[in-house]
Image 1 (cartoon, one colour):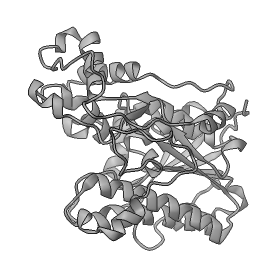
Image 2 (cartoon, one colour; image 1 turned 90 degrees about the vertical axis):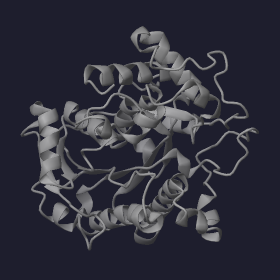
Image 3 (cartoon, helix red, strand yellow; image 1 turned 90 degrees about the horizontal axis):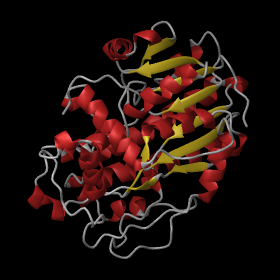
Amino acid sequence: MIPQMKKQHVLLTGANGFAASHILSNLLERGYAVTATVRSQEKAAAIIRSHPSWEGRVKFVIVPDFTKSQPFDEVFKSAEVPFAFVIHTASPVTLQAEDMQKLVIETAVLSVTKILGSAHRHGGMDLKRFVLLGSAVIVLNSFEDPARPGPPYTEEEWNPVRIWHRQFPAALECGDGVLGYMVSKVQAERAAWEFMKMNSPAFELTLMNPHIITGPMIHPISGMSSINATNYFVIAKFIDSVHKDELKDMRFPFYHFVDVRDVARSHVDALTNPAAAGRRVYLISELTTPQLVLNIIRKHFPSLRERVPEGNPAQTLPDGVHPTGWDTRISQDILAKGAVDGQWGYISLEKSVLDTVQFMIDNNLI
């Protein structure tokens, strides 16, 4: 079990995001002092409106554009108490952009290299650990045949999409959002490890790579448009938006998930977990498919059955889809060593969907 380190100072970027809001909540619950970056004062105010009890417990710093010259230098230099840890979540998460290369891929890389550079120059010996929120798409093979599962993925693999997109740039020019997202994540993580190799900073790096993230939302919500992309695509879209005749052709880009609450606690655990130093950690709970989500919603919310198609409850995988699994024994061991009770277990898909839909109902989103 890792001892708690009270009142040590954490820098959290992108604090108004879906996962980051849960990370912020977890940090405060465990007694850390937190400085949180957001892109505007209004975003900071929205966080406090959503969580009035956080007022005075979080110091907000405005970083309107983290691609500009050294945007994080002043954050480190002006900290009254040096940062012991950084959790970096701020990165573009969009499947639609006019210029995927510039607005998604290059921005994702800059968001990582800029803050790593500031941490190296100004973090000093006080900064112990830098935890980066990545994605499991860094590992999976984007070009495998979904009908023929390959050997389980491990922490040692890399998605070949990085090489492929250089050979076939037209895919990005055509606005392939999923491809752009995957390339951005792969290049950002590679840039992070290359930075560590070339600069040998005093702090250690940990990459946390979740698959599709779902779960109840605690970030500022102002209507359907503020539902985060994965919750919308994996859950909310099936309520009213998808009709029975569309289901047979419905596919997910990826078929494994993790609940946002597990993402949050894993990031905070990683701050003081010696086993996580210099490691890639994968957060994979279990399989998710359109039919599994439909089955869960219809089971737990009878009042929504008229708005949610039945599909074929007995056929949980779409025709021709047999996704490759994951061998996460190494990651599971690292996560257990960082957990408060020395054990690690995941929230199930059923609970994640149930809690998410209930949140949407309670907040008049569906």
